[in-house]
Length: 236
Image (cartoon, rainbow, N blue to C red; front, side, top):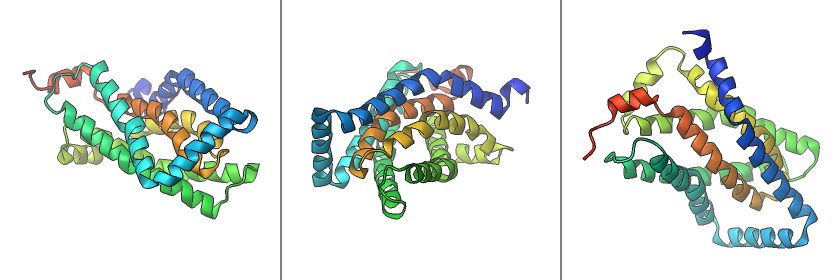
């Protein structure tokens, strides 16, 4: 492996490439949280959203996360890449939408568990503990491997055998490093901002950032252009 293609260098390139949009998203999240505490109309609107979410319950988490994490990024990928016209395009869109609907339940449950066992305070210790658990336990040992597995499975046209071959290659976890490092650049500051909000509003804000992050994951895990061209079926 050349030095330029080492996991660390790929990770750093991915982090640099996503620095500007990541900062923009963090600035947006920070401005929204600041407006919630400082601007009465914004607080009233977000409180109304929180009431609506509590009234709707689980379907809100499923539909919201499915749209922002799955459907919208999948449509962007479909129309922005050279894979248009493949017969399994809409299978991919459907699979990604269903995957992120599940993630809506998962993240909502995870935030509720953190609120229950760590607390809902906005003090430094509470926010730092939640951020550490989210980014140093939940993310590297569950979220990133699951996302890599899913998007690799989708790119391999739903072939579990192809994904297992990737697992058998030496150093497969090192290939997750670009996702993890680039994800930290986006999510470490962002989740610290998200945890400032009441628990019922954390998922909606997470969904907005999730849309960008999902696109980043999809672009990082898709095969190189030459490989995609050589393996893509003939258009019909």
